[in-house]
Length: 407
Image (cartoon, one colour):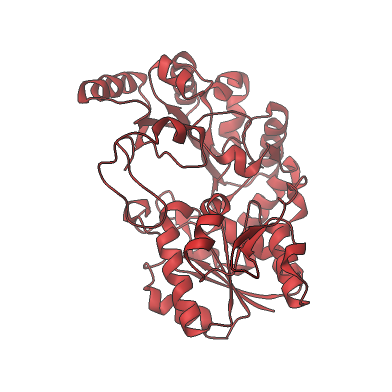
C-alpha cells in the first residue's frame, strides 16, 4: 500500500527554533514497522518553511496514496492545523483513508469524531503495532473493530473505540524508519546535525498536571547496548552530531542508565546528548556524573516546576527545593548545563507571588530558565482543580480553552 506520513507545520510560532529543525520521531517510529510490513512510505515534513498547507496537500497526494497518516509531537496546539489538512485532503481525494494519532487525539477521540468526519480512524496510544494491524485489516477488507487501540465512527456514525492495545513491552521490537529522512536537513544546538530518540517511555511519578503516565502506562527502557550502537551508527553512517532525548525521564533506573553510559563511551563517538530528567536522579547519581559528561551529556532540562514546597506537594511533584539546588550545583561542577523549568498557574498568583518565585529561581543559579504557564489538559488530574477558574480568553481551535492559569 502507498502511505504518506504528514508532519503538520506547528501552529504555535513560538515553538519553532529559527534555522533548527528536529525530525518527527513519532512518525518515524511508526514508519519503520510499516516499511518492514511491505508498504511504500513517504514523509512530508511541513515544518520546513513552514510549508503552506496547499503545497503540503499537493505533495502528499501527488502519487495518490491509499493512506495518509497525520501526527505531531505538539498534538494539542497542532490539532487545528491537522484538522485543516485532513479536510483539504478529503476535499481533493475523498477515497483516501486519513489516520490520525498523537496524545491529543488519543484522549479526545470521541470529541474529534463527533465534531468532524475528515479523520477516518484515530490510533490511540503507542502506534507501532496498532497502525500496522489497522492498515493490514483495511487492506484485507477485514472489520476494523478487530483491531485494538483505534477509534472510528460505527455504522450509525457514532464515535466508537475498540479495546485498548497492549503496551509495547520490548521497545527494541520496532525500529525507527530513519531512511524516511535526510539527516542533513535536521539540526539543533546551533546547526549540529541532530535527531530525536527515546531510550525509555513513560514515568513512574504521579505529577497531577502531566498526562504522559496515562498515555505510556508504565516506564520501560530500550536495551542500553543496542541503543548506544544505534547512536553510534547514526553518527558513522549519517553524520549525526547530537541526540535530543524525548524521554520523560530516561534515568529512572540507575542500573540501565549506567549500562547505557558505559556502552556509549565504549562506542567512542563524539555525539552530544541533551534531554530532560529529574533533579533527584542527578543527586542520586552524583558519583557517576563524570560518566554522564564522558558519554556526551551536555545539558539536562530539570523539571523543577516551582520553588515553593507547598506547591510542589499540591502538584505531587515528588521533588524538593533542596534537591533542585543540589542538582544544579552538581551539573555545573561536571560541566553540564542546567535548564530549569518554572511554571506559573498552579494556584491563583498575583504579580508579587510571581516575582517572589522568580527571584527564588534566580537564586538557584541555573544556566538557563524556561518559564511556562501550566495548561489544564482535560486528561490530567490538574484539570479538575482548574476547570472552574474564570476563563479570560478562549483559545482558537478545537477543544481547548484558556483559563487564568494558562495561555
